[in-house]
Length: 285
Image 1 (cartoon, rainbow, N blue to C red):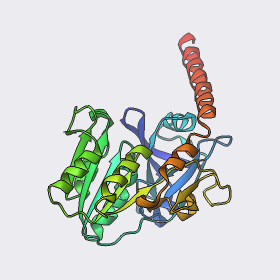
Image 2 (image 1 turned 90 degrees about the horizontal axis):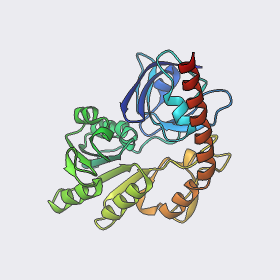
Image 3 (image 1 turned 90 degrees about the vertical axis):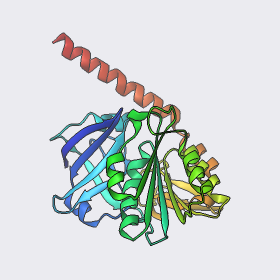
Image 4 (image 1 turned 60 degrees about the vertical axis):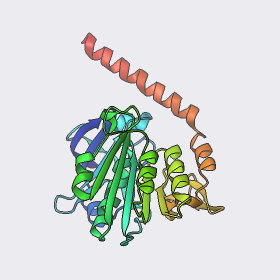
């Protein structure tokens, strides 16, 4: 059992958890993840470690409540416990002094990009961050990114905050302005990562994406996280989660991620109904 020290919403349906996990905090590196189970009959869900504090023995997870399990997790509060938490898993981010490194986060992808942005800065890179959100309320970790990056650009789809447009448009503007970019990390929805890869491909800019396919055991045994990279089958949990963006078969990745969409809808509906029943029971009492 892993105790939640602090839990707070930082955007609509997006919650930041500070969790007591001293062994994981001591060993984790940028780019790695954990697999959690909210309770003893719950599904296993991979979540990137956004940060850690060795002195306090804590790790930080940032969770977007989309499906049943993430909604259940986001219902937990300070002092509650997570049943299982295994990690750190996956290969750490490859870090070196590339020169100018751009970290791009779409929505909650910013939380996944954050630890690597920190490591890139520590390696001596000139670091630029492009943070995207549908609107101002969905922009996360701007202050944290500002503290660790040399430049931060915020974009919103609706223009309610920062630059009105997509992260790819801002990236293209930097390139068009003559900025020499040596490395790009892009993390977010599959269409966004694919679009970033298409922008950088034209300029032969080294680009890495972090994949988040269906995952069960996190050890490469179940095969659920298969993806195609450079025309070869990889297991994201052990071979990744980061890969060369220009070699990822995004179309196949997107199809595989839709495999259990109907089952996910049924599970979420069941959870929502139970939540509504619980609320009504409290009201009646």
